[in-house]
Amino acid sequence: MERLWNFVHQHVLFPLAEPMVPWKKETYVGLDVFYKEYIEVGGRSFGQNFIPFLQGLGMPKQPRAFEWCAGAGFVGFSALAHGLCENLALADISKEAMKACRRTIAKNRLGQRCVAYVSDNLKDIPQSEKWDLVLGNPPHHADEYAGDRRGYDDKWGIRRGFYTSVRPFLNPGAVIVVLENNRASTLDGFRGMIEDGGLKIVLTQNDVPERTSEDRFYFIVTMRREDTPPAWLTGG
Ligand SMILES: C[S@@+](CC[C@H](N)C(=O)[O-])C[C@H]1O[C@@H](n2cnc3c(N)ncnc32)[C@H](O)[C@@H]1O
Image 1: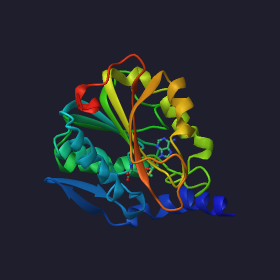
Image 2: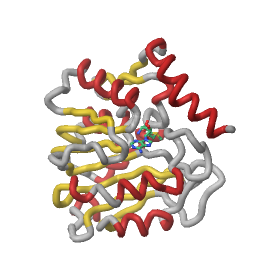
Image 3: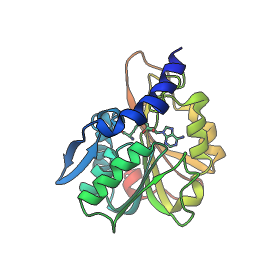
Image 4: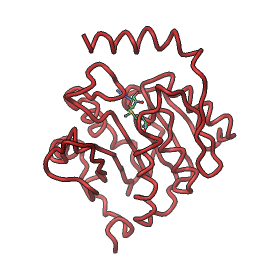
């Protein structure tokens, strides 16, 4: 029943009501990010953990970043505004989310630096895209929110699809940072699919080995198997 309701909500009610829903705005270092309430799924709150995490590591500005499962792009646009990347690509399966990203790009005159793709995972990303940094706050749950693609990753299929298809888009030395929730997952659940994708885990932050009863957000940092992690990642 919950799954049916979520489907009707997502595919019938949302598209009908969407034009009437007012735009909202969040500002990062002078960059206005536009969104509608239902698109916001953590990017404005815990999603902003990316910024101090990357700044704390001393990451230099990356030429081109990508936000996977971007929603309204709170994470990616904030990274751009904070000088963590020069250019930004964003993608999401939701047309409404990408409409919001395109509004942000237009209103901030970022057309030369940013692009937004509607894409199921990486399937519709042009092969010419090459990234130095990938950021992602994907749906966190495989046993809650069934039918709601903002929260539910059925049998971790979105993760598996991402980790096993992202390699061709990575420049040598590229770093992938994904935000996870220990209430829903543990690092060990993702290790196999990361390795199957020709990647390796180079760093994690704030994870614990067992699932937690409360939200506990953690980062998984991966790179291509053959790449040497940069000094800013290893503290060298
Ligand atoms: C937890 S929300 C996070 C959104 C945004 N990153 C944020 O932090 O606010 C997960 C996002 O993943 C998107 N998503 C779900 N399934 C997807 C898929 N197969 N391909 C691309 N995006 C997907 C949803 O539309 C949603 O915007």
